[in-house]
Image (cartoon, one colour):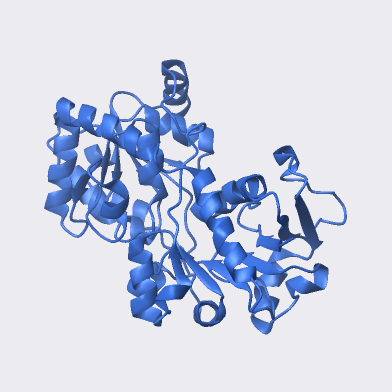
Length: 383
């Protein structure tokens, strides 16, 4: 029986990001699609000895266990660059599945690592968290891992071009969306959400506040819309870490005319249920990102029946197909024209809504898990 240890740290984070949702969904589905293997969800927690943490009990799979290690996560960030504590100290395994670029310390070569994007190489100014030791660790992982998983053909090309990764070692496995969670919400829930966030009238949604999300250009394009058609813009997402404490969203917002500022609402980090309702009640998603390795917000919006405006750059055309309005993310006028079309063209919104729902339904987590399990078995095969 193949024994797989999964780095579950992103999945159990208090505020799960896209990577966390990826890890969460695979941990819950891999044991089901691969019953002949055993899986361990491995993570660290400073209170693991005080409280018996259980994040995956509801999975109900006999071949899934979780192992919470008593070790402060902040300390792990410091010691991992020196190679300890190694995962194998806490139990044996055949394959280590690194869900977030760099595996926890290990000496095994049987590592399968998911490289979600290479924005820190393409746009280093947007990735201040990618410090030197971590970049070196990514390089080491790419060179040493038995297999690399890329979520898109775009990310695979980046791996081949920027790191010289052997093509036979890189496997493209698209991510997915949980259509049980992400689906058009009821009108009652939308009304409750509007009341909770103080949203009146029609609105657009922007998801994410990191530098890659291109908020300064989006806000400039939004400000350039004629006042008589300009809806509200709701920006959701937690503030991302910056070494200088800067935040591109509010910084750009303060430079806008007062009437435009009054039409923008910042709502911070949202739970999945809140995000579904916010998306479902919107005119559309405005997501002119500079670079995405996959583009979860696009797929999530489509699954909620929300028309999408996104970029014609990186992996986004590959993901969106003909189910979204594509614009040049570097061109404020192009973004403005796309927003105006999205706001004023009812027929287009209807077509995008139908096409988006159909496209989202083809991205299934169970299929992602099946293909991932196959790669894990390849990495664990003798020889």
